[in-house]
Structure formats: structure tokens, C-alpha cells
Length: 205
Image 1 (cartoon, rainbow, N blue to C red):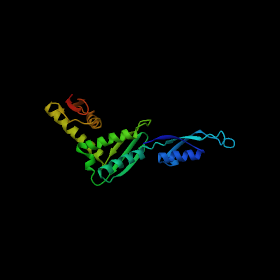
Image 2 (cartoon, one colour):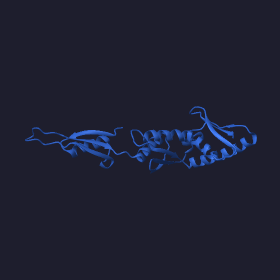
Image 3 (cartoon, rainbow, N blue to C red):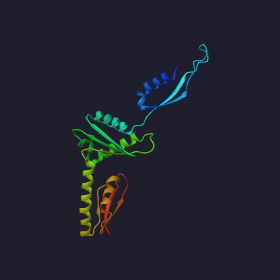
Image 4 (cartoon, rainbow, N blue to C red):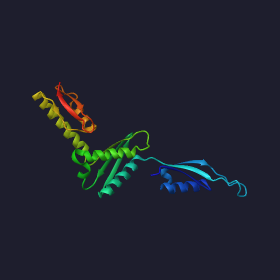
């Protein structure tokens, strides 16, 4: 997909019109730089065309919505997408009839989709924008589940004096475990293994 284009025309307006048509964009969605004003010349001789550079304004929310709608259409899943941009954090929520498919086992499909949205939103963009993708409040529910798991397993380690090895988790979920137990008097946590099979170990202090 084109993000910018140079066009010429008899006038600046004509060049801009051709550029916007090629980009399939409106004036509100674009930044226009006049490279050459052009001139009519004398009696038709020495005329120079006008030349413009038109760039699409980057809109991370619109980009994320468009990408997710394309994915949903390919999967045959009607989706409603809402976004919220706060500083360099883009929060995206998707809603629909069968979100279990997009969540996947332990949120793996949702995480993969979030990774793809991050790539799309940050393609050629600066500064970096962090994207969090959620549906049906899954992130908050998963966080509560992991925090509860961490506390229960810490009690087990204290009682048995044996380390507990958790299943492989993504960096976000490992941080939840570490944070939940960082002030625990009896256990410590550390990560081992290589992505995507890196896991948390809960050990006695």
C-alpha cells in the first residue's frame, strides 16, 4: 500500500488531485508539500508543470482497525473494533459473537494477533507505539488467574521446600508472576529457557 507519492499537473491543485486519487485518500488524510509551483510560460513556451509530494497522515487507530477488519473478513467473523490512544500506548478491543476463536488456548491466538497489529501499526512509524489487544476482558481475567496461581504455588514451595516449574509463558505473563511474588518473604522467581518456551521457576529463598 502506497504511503506517499509525487505527482505533476498543470497546476498545483491538479497535481494534488491526481496524487490523492492514486492514494485513495482525502485532503484531510494527507500532508501536501509543493515541490514546484509550475509556470505557464510565455505563449505556451517554457511552461513547467507543478509538482507535489503527498504523504498519508499516519493514524495508528485507523491502521489497527483496518487491519483487524481485514483479518476478520478473511475468517468470516463479524467484529466491532474500538480503540483508545494514550501517549504511546494503543489499546484495541474487539467484540463479536465467537471470540473464543480469537483468544485461542491460553490466549495464544490473541497474543499472535496482537503481535501482528504491533508490526502493522509500527511499520515505518516513529516513535514506537505499543499495542495491547483485548477481547471480553480476557487480559484482566488472565492476570487475576495468574496472580492467584502464583500465590498458591508459592505456598506449595514454602510447604514442600521444592521448586515449582510453570508452563512456558510469553514475557507479559511471566512479568505478572514475577510481580505477584516480588515481595514474598519465602520464595523468589526467575525465568529459564529460550523463547517461545521460556518459563518461570518459583524457588524457596
